[in-house]
Length: 588
Image (tube, rainbow, N blue to C red; front, side):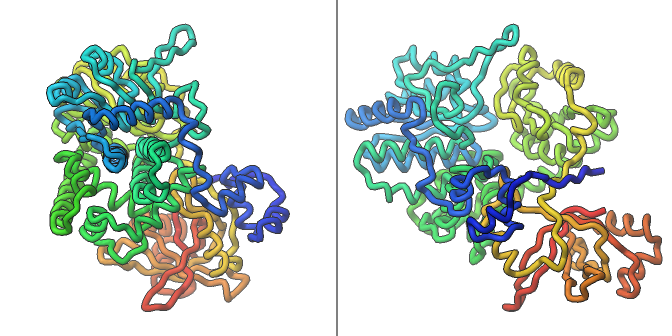
């Protein structure tokens, strides 16, 4: 069951359309994306790197860059400590490349997911001291490393934190006290006294901003930043940041860079992933390139991916890219097995009634817990936590739905968690094996989730009659790109659309190709595609129209079938010929 609703934001669409030279349909779509003023609308319709906020507005940015310049002058050894996901790898690459260009004596360390766990730890600090490191610079981690930073400072190290995760806090009688590590500088736009106007950036963008400010202070041309923009864009998409404000500008121009990249490693990865010659879009970053980068940190070491992007030799880059692609293929297979095991547990062990799903898969590779939690969340539309056996106790990853702030809910259970951190939509946690059932009981006992919260919501931009669909409209819609979280592809709806005929196509017979029509206007007839469960569609038709109705539909004669549908119009190009087709996302 799904809940369909049409966004009903009010505005004078005709005035907006006339002012900006766009259609009223596009004006409505822009207003639906919470663009409120003419300035915002102008910025949205015309992306520009001039829209990016100045890095100097970020708390401790000036202090961090002054410290780094001092260390560069002294020739002091700087070690970057990153993270093993895409955002962490990109942030490490950006800082390492930027600091190297500034003449720094710099190297990097990325924790190993299973051996080290997330973020900087005591052994990484001790290893840095043994290697004669003077300064530790974190990226995409460190904001919660209070004890670790204390240890580093006691040993005489300079510590600069750059991060974007939520600031840890303790709450007593409704009063929150935020806890920050005692570092020499802490750069994180989520600090409550930070004046940076946009806190929704990823670790890679925080790193990019630091390099931008450092370049400016050291007299390095702004153009030198261009080669780093593509990595900030990959980080933004793969860390699932909202594509609004400066994030959208970074991804918009980052994609342009990626499509003509001169980075040997990125070029080799595009080749290995089989997408050479295609126009690289957000989809390719999130679902093709990103997973290959992530696979290194999941099954091997994230340093493999970093080595790929730092590679200066084509053959070496090709070998590394091939290895990442193969690791990702292995990861896909292991993920499938884990998802099947999780579904079995949920449906056979009485967990279906829970509003917050907590699933323990002892033998699952701990690096896959987050992906499996994401798949479980999508299947049941409930917050999901997948736990696996770790070196010490149990480790897990959580993925959430919009109505449930996972970070805050886990905070209520912190007395039984040995470690946790993250965002409202995703978190990581550790606990003792004997506390798993207690965690499940407490999260479910104190949740305020309603049945309505657990219904998948289908948010529709507008009703779009078939006769209004045109090449011009589809081209105009491209002004809203790049699409992603926070700036989703526009969805339209229609009731009672006549499905004249249908056929099952595709190598695996898993695609429905249909002809849909407006009964009033003969000319308004289009090909429509459903890339979903064909059996489910057939059953829906049989339930309403009987076996004869399905036969008539497939036979293409006197079809009685009418559908309500949620869709977007697209252009299909085949053998140089363009045709409009309708991509159906949901139907009933």
